[in-house]
Length: 339
Ligand code: DAH
Image 1 (cartoon, rainbow, N blue to C red):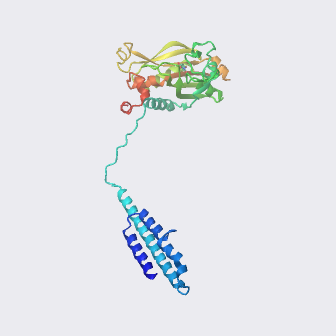
Image 2 (spheres, rainbow, N blue to C red):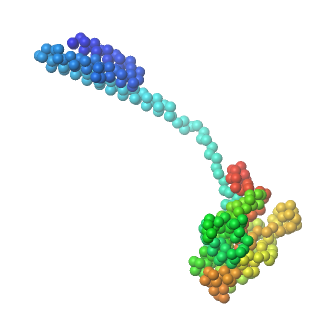
Image 3 (cartoon, rainbow, N blue to C red):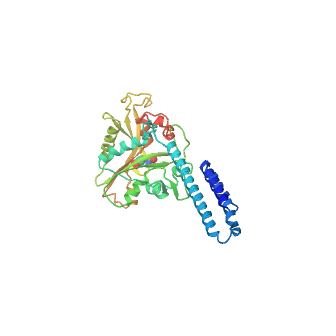
């Protein structure tokens, strides 16, 4: 018995020493200590041992078992450590390697132009406010004096969510929201996205941006409008920029005008850029219609005001001499980087 036990022990210790993997160790454990393992067999044959020898033999078997288990544990630990060390070796970071160059984005021409516009008007004491892109018919049309049978309300021009809710076709609704707040005087600009059912081409897109402007106070006149917008044009396009107002019609202003600036490419002589005109149209404007004031509960006898609307893409295209609006929506960094 003693000899047999020793033999099993020696063999086991040898096997453990040369086992190359955790699986192998487990196999060894099962072959010795499992249900049909060699040591288990010996324990089972204890009944054949003389009763007086049993405690001694039992002790021996237990000692052998404890030793084998300890060695198995030790071998397993060593193996785990070796695996961990190998893993760490592979994970070493060479801090002296040059870093990957991260490709930086770039501000969009629209953003640059808008920040410029905001800078000019904030400098004149205006607030910047935002209106909703999904809008009620009332704010986009009715409160702006645009009657139910106006062609702009046609489904061919306007994206309707349902009969009463639509995607705003202009930022002018922000004027109404601002006046409804009931706080006077008002000096605000309101930039934002607008939507029209247009086909995409070099000058059209179903979604573009406008910047609305509104001033309401006592004694505001057309002279204030002219002075303000002439100053804006100079700040935007250069000190020598001249402005010209042409009569126009917008339902929510009376009188209404479109403002042209002298071509900043040729100075007004006429070139390819201004199509030989010497002038470039940049915005619509006018004195707020008394009816619009009334609908917003402002007394037109006491208060007057002016409004204007600028196409942001138009300004960006002009200022940065971009000849196709579609380039603004592709967000190709190679294009954006140039501005
Ligand atoms: N909302 C007009 C448009 O989309 C632009 C405009 C014209 C805005 C005159 C104004 C204005 O505030 O006074 O064509």
